[in-house]
Image (cartoon, rainbow, N blue to C red; front, side, top):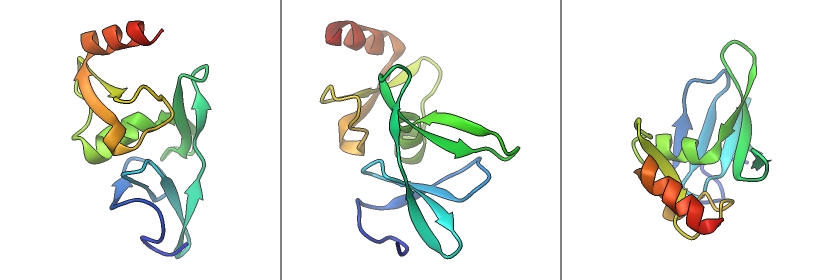
Length: 116
């Protein structure tokens, strides 16, 4: 896959990990493999409550990271203490930028209760 090919809008670098990773506004994640970018599959994690991806840390360990947190860091200025990322449309597996918003932790708890 060539640089900026196919899916979604602009790509943003994911920092703090051993390899070069990037994410776009459709929540698609890629890793640099030589001169090419290859897709990394996301999967349901945390008892199927959200999408996660495994990324390799600088120390060589693998970390399971919530896709919503990567999206917030890359496109929304990050999640500050007392805040949470929620899905607008209710689908926890649609992590596209247009389906996410940052709310207070209290609001997130209320939204979660209504969805249950």
